Image (cartoon, rainbow, N blue to C red; front, side, top):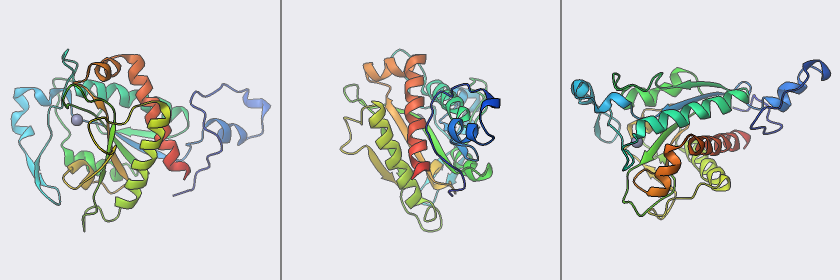
Length: 252
Ligand SMILES: [Zn+2]
């Protein structure tokens, strides 16, 4: 959908004297994402690891290729900083950036609490269409062997009756994210041969009816990635890179 106008990318909106410019000028310059709706999925929930929610976590659903459970706890840094919290903070930083550019932004969860669980992956996946989003980005951190670092992106494989409607656009979104993240200075994964993985087993992707990708920002078990993921400065850095990827996709 190209009903919006993108004339300039302004990451931090410059305050303008509203009276000084004709109507519409400010919008075109300062709010390149006006009219765009973006869904962000901060993967997992802090309380997914809370044993009192074990029954909820055990719910299952077929996702087009396999049966998967509701959700998982996610990983953590060796210092114990949880993935759910990293995802949550980056998602909220990203939301602010996108909103400053005029976008409407919806998150799949409204809190990060050890007293809360989910939503399940099938509800996360269906969320983008529910809020009539142009696209959905799911934010995660990986838990790989300590030596490897860097980001990778997962796009949905084409599954008839499930993702055939979104697989090509999702692939374009994945390529835009990869390109913009590299340009922003986030290193591509050193432990995968390609920063793009196309997978058929991810419920969050398979249940989506809008273009979608999962971005694994880095390896939480790697010292350097973990330090960046745990700091507010690092979280802001990732959010800016994700925003650049979304803008790149929308500008095509
Ligand atoms: Zn995750």
